[in-house]
Length: 179
Image (cartoon, rainbow, N blue to C red; front, top):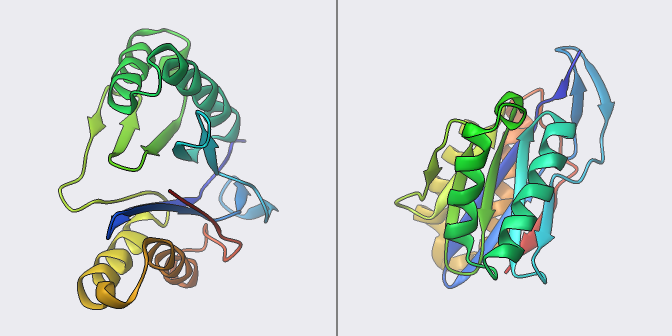
């Protein structure tokens, strides 16, 4: 059985960037194994934030590979993401990894997948994982209708809180990182 399920939400708003992730690790479809996993991390001298959804062991491998690419390309987020996606897609071992990443710096936010996609959203908001669609909808509503009164980290936290009330694979132990 694989451990999986999570929600990661990232937003750029009013010159700030924030990413939030819940702490739940689920074994199969019915057993919560951990409540306090840290799925959002700072990388490359605290200038980049990355969050994962999917298999935990696979995500750690991807974090390590992505950080290596960041170092190789001197913190160039787009180049590191594209190079990781190419390697992930073409390498026989990496291709079997089951995870997705959201990576961001102060200017750019990207979704990176094992099928070779590197996607930058039009609206500065991304979400992945089992509760991703709930967090995405909540985050878009918060940004559009209350954005004048909220910071990026508040939008990220509230979007995850709302997702945790709906998705059984998302809990309310939320880690938020901001740039």
